Image (cartoon, rainbow, N blue to C red; front, side, top):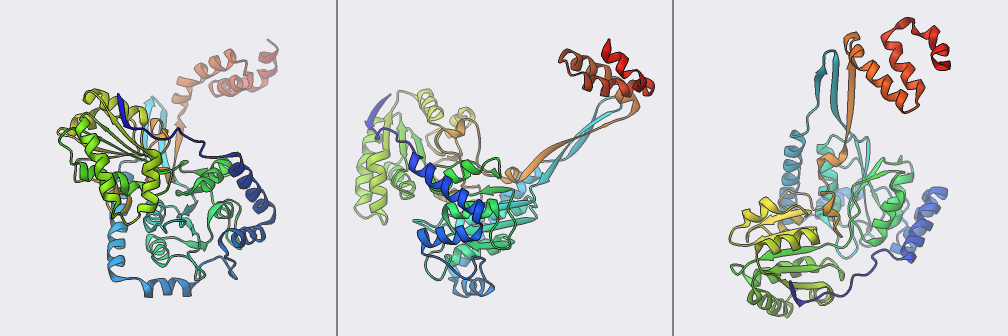
Length: 431
């Protein structure tokens, strides 16, 4: 493996300053409630409305101002995300099975009762994030989804983003952003009750807030700067490779873009194409910084080494541009989302195709997937025992309990074998 372009050394995503700031905001909101939320909203967003709850009038304005093309494409986005989430939900079934005579064990999928859905609005007001969190939760039959996003200006939330929340099924909507939004969802805001789980991407402060709140509430996952990796052979088109790398680079100045290829010629030409694109790239100010500092081009010897490098990096997004992409599909194991072939781009997954764009970053794809309908469901188990079933398992349970010195458990088990056992408990224990 050799580098045609190396990135800067990795830096710590969450600094001590971020940790301390987040901790202070969360503690203040826990103690003071909406008063602290308002104070930090004024400080960070210059936003202090009479109520943070989005009004009916604001929703009507968002609907009236919605561009027809944006409405149609956003409706397409909602339909695709909803449909894919429904297909996922259909694979999750409740069941009961008799595993021993008289022992009936089961599984149930129960929706989380209260979910908070956050949509970022820093550099970009992400319409798609509102859909990915809210619509997916509603397909899971979550009874209450409280959606939040920061203000775009003194009129409040970005109109199309608000429209997407409403159309995706949000039950309550509050215009508040950043760490104070995380705290508002976890501890409550105004007359809104706290949620049980928070989902949605955000910046380093938002991610750290989710980390610190975990346990108080559930979270979907901790997402850092977005990542793209492309694996390619000599059949790939360097102009397309460069375009897709820069497309993800516009997310932010620390977003890695990685090309690994078996062809040095493709690697060098892709670097040249990146610079050609940047001459006219619409978000060149952001993308050029990200590419300069975190763009990477690696040349490897063969497909197997290409697979190994991809699995080691475990990227959030992984595109496959090779003659035989199915060879990689069958063997790759570590990625958040896989985009197979020239005509499947990360941009589709981010904006309209239907798969969820909240995905694991910073090698978390080694142990988790991204946000999906199952994240909003609790897997619980049930058990039933007839007298016959109790007879099958009681003594085994008691013997294991005895070996663990948990005599109370043993008593509970043996009592099922002999209802007359209770008077002899003290004698049993003394023995």
